[in-house]
Image (tube, rainbow, N blue to C red; front, side, top):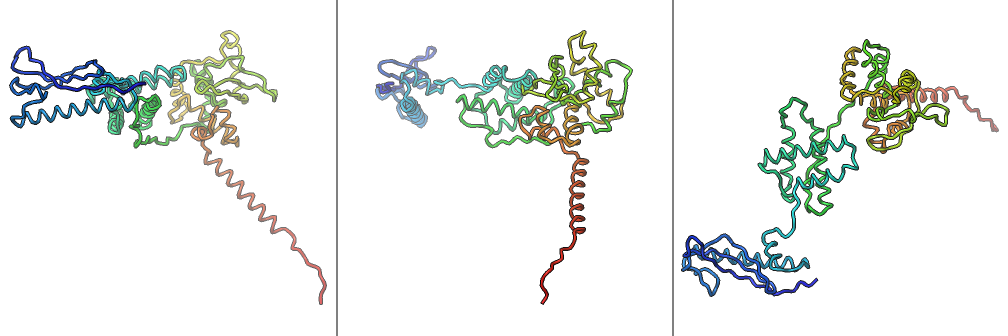
Length: 423
């Protein structure tokens, strides 16, 4: 592309309509006989303007300062021309004017980037995960309006201070409707989602500098609730007066003995129960969250629950009678209270119980547990499943018994006798 051009920059004046004795000062840029003009928002008395020099007559300090300002404007126009030339861009009078005002390239705003991200990942994420991004977007809009008194800002305006202030806003936010406020990890999740949007903006070349460069997400490790064998047996052995509580109990227990999440059980169909190579029934499905394939052998208690609802399944076509997530968790609170279990029981506790009480504590290797849970990384399984203190004690006792057996074996071994020539 040709970038050489003839450039002309001059200052000229126009009389004010309401006062012909006062002149407004303008800049005229000429490139290859094409012009672009703009006002520099300065004026001068007619008698103080030198039409030959296109400058103010320096008769006092204010006029000297005005000429200094005109020189600065002139230099900035030349710099705009130089920048376009170095970037090998088409040089026109209009292009120089737009570069001078910083308007030659469209700047992406924060909310435009958020909307672009949320609009283009809706096919990649599950509705529940996508909903969290919309929640972060809502916090951002409220933060901009309440703290910065604006609806949007340019991406290039983002900095470390913005992130820290946004974090503080979420931590101190008090919703109008009564609901739980964000925990530390909830706040970090919002910032993690914002970080992902910023990384996308950098890849799209909307932003050069990463405002998260010196910021570190600070997640707290939380102990995951799970049921002990005693608590699991307590729920299993309790019958309830209402059909709803008994059904929720059965679905919860089915999750405890399969490791399936609520949505995976809700979407499970009869044709996904197949006979495995060992002749036993297996569940063949995919995780709704990650789309990972799952093959889970049915434990005896899980089989009993399926058999209990076999007739109903033939009528409805549904493998199990699963209620809504909200109703299920509400009923679980009643079940825990009736059984005297003082834990915050949600449906996801069943998945933790499968990983700990049902599998790991009974000697199932963590690699196998990871496969049954549908995890792609072993580290993910280690979050869900812990090696119980009881299991650690048993393993160490077995090790000590092994040492004792070896010690006893050495002490009972016969002392070798050497037979040789005696001189």
